Image (cartoon, rainbow, N blue to C red; front, side, top):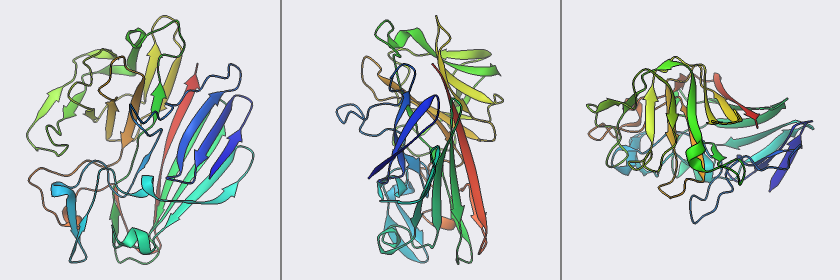
Length: 294
């Protein structure tokens, strides 16, 4: 089921399936600013990644002594969440451990996803609570897709990713199978403030940039300055990605708190690098702020 919140500038719709934002509309122009989710290109809009980001080593994990198969980016994006709170400009969904989640991950948890509108900014908070586990460790991240071009007068070549500081973005490679090699690091560019969108930018899939100094990363229309800007401060990993389609119809800016599995890494869940480790009764949260200046 879908629910909508709005303020003077924005109308946001999210689905209980995955607690996923499926639409952000500029009320002044009527323009849809999220990717439409065309299944012929990429059938999602802005999935949440939990309890891990990327792939599992060998596509599986060993947790509490048992083996569990797992696909990419965890299971929260494919589960039905429950609306637990709503006002005119905020709404919160919750996913609680149960029979279905324990088939995939044998831990008790509560995941809350809260959307709040503040002017032209969407604040999306993901909060994780450990109800009873001796130790709850997890990975988490965001995967919003923004539609480009912004109008019929532009093409994808009219856009660039823009940092707010000079960067030499160092990337960790997960080629060719989506798992970290532990040895392949490379610079996407050196001493730049922008990365142009080109037909071959994502020919080898995403770019996972580590330890950026910038507080924001935006997709910017070069001739007008119109932009969608994400606050990436406090995120150790930021990915950019789009489907391998020409012309490019959307771009993703993905702040992550954890990384994919390692190609030759341990299958044991407790050995995997994580975003946080919670004791019983402890909670943790992270917030992505996205400003639509377009």
